[in-house]
Each structure stands twice: as C-alpha cells, then as structure tokens.
Image (cartoon, rainbow, N blue to C red; front, side, top):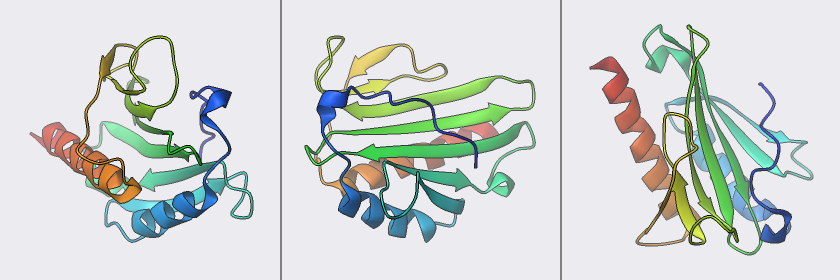
Length: 147
C-alpha cells in the first residue's frame, strides 16, 4: 500500500486508540469494497489504519482508492479518503475531530481537494456509527462515478 500522508491532526489529539483501530480494521476487512487493510507502522503499535479499496468497484478512470484512519484515545479522529485518477489528479475528502484553529472540533474537508472546510454535525461519535456514515458516503461517491 502507498504511504499515508503526514499526520494531519495536531499532536494534541492524544495517543492512538489501538483498540478502536483494531475494531475498525475488523469491520473494514470484512467490507466487500475493501481489498486489503494494513496498520502503519504495524499491528502491534498501530498509528494509522489503511483500507485499500477494490479497484474493480470503480470505473477504469480511478486507478486506486484508499481510506487512512487515525483514532485517538481522546475520541478525536481523522478519516481521509483518497482517489487516484489515471490523469494524475486526486479526489479527496476528510472527516476530522480534533482541536484546531480553523473550525469547530468536528469538521469536514470537502472534495475534490480537501482544502475547503465546513463544520460537521454527526448524530453519534461512536466509532462504528462514524465508520458507517463514512462508508455510506463513499458508496454514494462510487455510485456517482459510475453514473
């Protein structure tokens, strides 16, 4: 798998929540959209969970797609979705909850470049609820790519 970007969440988010990362890995690895999962740097000291999407789920113009998940013991998180396209362009977005100076603690970095940021409201901050919300959004993105 390709390397995740440098930490996008500030260091004040706290230490990685290994238990939550492992829980999310179990769910990701059983999802039909996901071809492979991996921990960075490894499963013993995970800081980032990566999910590589099955390229067969996408039109040929998308050469790769992945999800980089960081989860912290403070219940802060960063979930970064990235698509690589054959023309060299990237389409990405990110769901974040962390202390910052640009928005409220819970916010969304909008596609296609993840540079525009808007405040975000979610019905629950439970990791599996957030996982479900994000995977639903990615499924809708894939449907849009096919239409």
